[in-house]
Length: 175
Image (tube, rainbow, N blue to C red):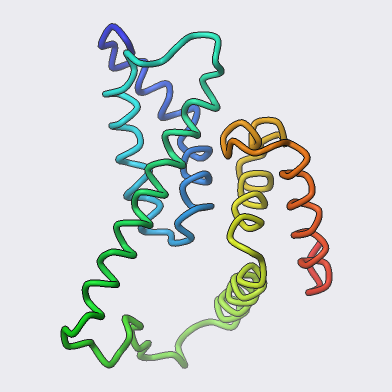
């Protein structure tokens, strides 16, 4: 990629897209936002290829870019929310769309939605830093060392937060 080879970007895309998405999703916690940010991450990787230092671990470098861009997106959204709540008229719907024709939804779909909502509610019980570590460990299949390097915190802190989060999830009935 340093030499402008688009095939290299294609290889990164094919190999690391799920990984990058899970890192971003771990931060932003919204599917659509995570998809948008992940697309931007790939552009940033292309534009930043010349800055990559061989020997520092490409996976960690990719994850750091993804995490930083996800954090930037959260900050941007917080500013937008702060600005919109500072006196502008607000929509009574609160951003939630009403579902019509709910009786046509199949039972299996309903069960899946209920389970997803249950998992999301349970994850809300975790502190943001615990949730981020759980997402990186479980969804991204990262090692504690990799998580430690990306978050720039001691590995002992990562493992402790992970264990605490797992205890909370088990108390809610999740393995």
